[in-house]
Image (cartoon, rainbow, N blue to C red):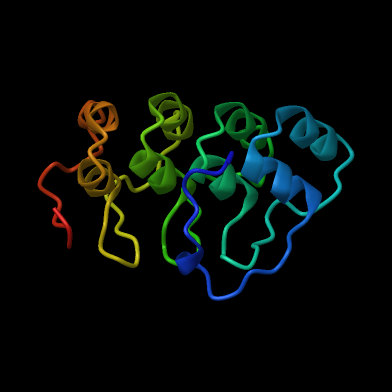
Length: 152
């Protein structure tokens, strides 16, 4: 009921994952904060889908969890998963504008990098009809509006 953007066809296997990953997935802010405090696991470790903690929080648009995880040294909004998609690309396609702004932050990274499907941040936002996210990306001078994509 709480997970709106998970398609089982995306995964080859479904293996369980630990408490911090589960809390990030479901957006349980208090539990994420507590588990990070006790340093219970490696936040850099990838799960069965190739996702890191920040990717799950972004995928499910949990803004407060994103903020907590970005406070960790190993969190990286531009770290690709096994399909070349980053936490930022997940949140641009799911349209949570606040989360996009947080993940974009002052970081310097390639805004035009294509994932394994040839999609960019802008093409994903446009493809999924995320007008607010497209506007945010238009305001970033780093985004190439003429960058080719396989979809748009």
